[in-house]
Length: 501
Picture 1 (cartoon, rainbow, N blue to C red):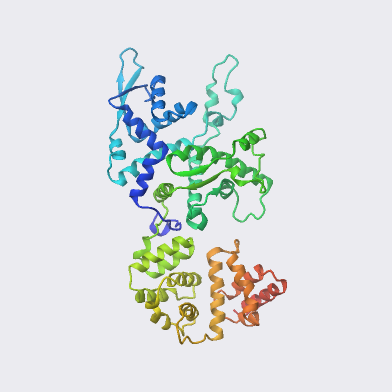
Picture 2 (cartoon, rainbow, N blue to C red):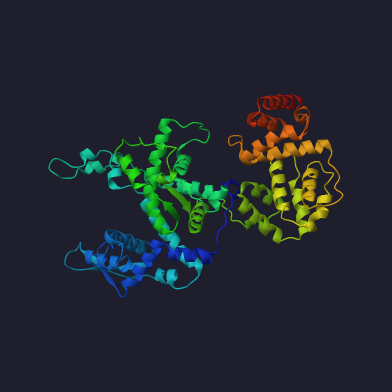
């Protein structure tokens, strides 16, 4: 797909490659795999598939997980498979000569071990980690055998033999591509939540029911049906299994579903369990992408054709590109992006470029001016001449006066009434454009509630404002304002604005 056709996601902030590499080396599964690769030393006998014999597996478990008890062999087997999949360990196969079909081998540290743990470039460490992630993602997207068989009753014949037809493709309730796409969608939604939600970006976990709902429920579903809630419950259980497998890679931090809850669910018919809003949501699992996870998911999204920028990528772009991006970012990311953009320019020149880019009566204009206010708020008195130059500009004069007043500037001329009304409509339009009608953000409701008290006879004059979004804004005010009479006046004004247009 061409660059113009690529779907774009909001930018995220990532630590340096050196910090990410340290996280990769410290993640439990890669760390155990590297330890086993070193343990292999001059060679360890393995089976035909590269698996460790029982005795050696016991040694490996004691080496990497001496305090893990019964879980130690499973941890060692997972780490050993990871080591083989990533090249931390390589297997030289040998023909024993005793049986043409009997092949054993010797496992030794692979070339990738030096790249991963030898103090080389951080990019080498991350490349090995990403390769290992792919193998674990493939495992996570593969259901257990009992989940693959559509008719388990027909699997075993009366004489105890296996019916091969039970393994026919039409009997398997599994589409590998569909399963992989499901897990990709879950991780991409988690990435988007991190990129767009201020709390998640700051480190808050996402409740598993919220993530599951984002995969199942249509965005316009006001009240989920029982069937939809059952689907959410089933997806939660599926994600729980997958995230448990993925957490040791360092991709995510996961607080799993309460075991007692799983036991309750297993006693019910499939999908009968639904989320009770009054229960403690932590029982249903919580998940967040780590910085390393953001790096990994972003890399896969870029390979899939997404335009997935990083904070700082816009430092060399013009002001219009910056202003189109910052309103869609969480506040912390938007501020960091703006700071890096401003750092590359003299303050006065930057202010003039921002103001010029903020002009326009196109549908994206209010959003650009919202972004312009955000970026300008980071500039000091060096930018003042640029703001005074636009005081008479209908589109920019209002925000310029606000900027100057906030800095205690002298001799600020009072705004004409039509400029005040235009700025009010423009500000509300920016909120609508940033969030959409479905979400009706709190900021929009707060602005709407203050209109009648701040401006006497607001609706009698607002419908005459020559702003392309006047009617749309007044309709939104009528929709969200809590006072019935005020809402009625807003809707009437919206009708008059449309009639006038």
